[in-house]
Length: 389
Ligand code: CMC
Image (cartoon, rainbow, N blue to C red):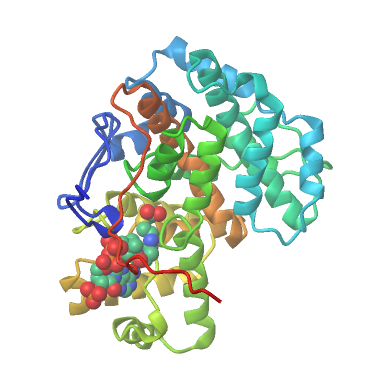
C-alpha cells in the first residue's frame, strides 16, 4: 500500500515545519520565536506575546498600541448571541459553551470567513482575541446565575477579563494588581506549545480549508480532554479527593504506581519534557506569591507540595521521567483567584488562543500545506461474501 510507518500517537512523526515555538524536552527549554519563556513571562503582556507569536517579531510601541486598541474595540458580542447562553442549562460545562459559542459566533460574520483573504483572517484574529474572553466570562456568569456585564474597554485585556468574571452591576470592580499580574503571566505561559493535540487539531481542521472559527472551536474541544488542558481541572479534583478521603498522599501514590483503576497522577508527565517543565517552575512561584498576597492558606497547596515531593523521590516516577507539568499548580492559583474548577480549562483556552491562531496562519500561508490525512494499517477481515438469505 506504500505505507511506511505505523506511529501511534505521532510519537516519531513530524507533520510540519514551524518557526513559532522551540522546545528542548531534555533540557527543559521553551522559546517563543526565539525568546525564552521566563523572560516573556516576567516582562511581557498577553497581547504583546500574541503579536510576537503571530507576526514573528516583538511589536513596536505603535504596533502594540494599535493592536491593543483594535482588540478593545471588538469586545462586544452581538446582542442576539447573548440569547445563545439562555438556551443552555446553568450546569453546562464552560468548555462546551466556549466551543459551541465560537461556532455560533462565526454565523455573524459569514462575509468575513474566507481563509484565503488576508483581511478576513486579520479581522477574525482580532475578533477572536477580543470576544473569546467575553464568551468565557459569560459562561462563568451563566453558571453562577449572575448578570452579564458589558466589557469596560478602558481596562487592560486582563483587568477587563477579571471584571467581567468577578464584577457585578451594583458596584465598581477594583482590580487587584497581584491577581492581574499573576493571570497575565499564566496566560503568557500557555500561549503556545508547538504541535500539542489541540494545536495539531487546529492545523488539521484548517488544512481542509475550514475557517478560523471552525478550526479554533475544534481546538477547544481537543483541549478539553483530561490528558491535555482538562488536566488542570482534574488536578484540583484529585487534590480535593485525596484531602477528603483521608487516605493520605503516600497511599494515593501507591495506587498510582499499581495503576489501580487506571488512576494517574494528574499534572505529572509530559510527552516532550523529560527533565522538568519550565512553565511548571514559574507557575509554582506564582502559586506561592498569589496565596501569600491574598493571605490564603489553602490546604490543597500543602497536599500538592507533599505529592510533588513524594513523587519526585520515588523510583516509579524517576524511571519514567515524570515531573510536574504546567497544570500541576495552576488550579490552586485559579481557585485562589475565585474561579470555579470548571473554568480552569477555559483559562487555558484563552491562553492558548494566540498559539492556535499563529499556527493556523502559518499553516495556511505555507505553500507546502496539504490536507492532513493520516494513513492506517488495516487489520480487519479480508473480502467476504454477503450471505444469501
Ligand atoms: N501518572 C502515572 N503514571 C504516568 C503518568 C502519570 N501522570 N504519566 C505517564 N505515566 C506512565 C505511563 O503509565 C507509562 O508507564 P508504563 O511504561 O509502565 O506503561 C509511562 O509513564 C509513559 O507514559 P505514556 O502514557 O506513554 O506517556 P505519553 O507521552 O503518551 O503521555 C501524558 C503524556 C501527559 C498524556 C501523560 O504523562 C499523562 O497522562 N499525564 C497526566 C495528565 C496530564 O497532566 N496532562 C497534562 C499535560 S501538560 C499540559 C497539556 O498538554 O495540556
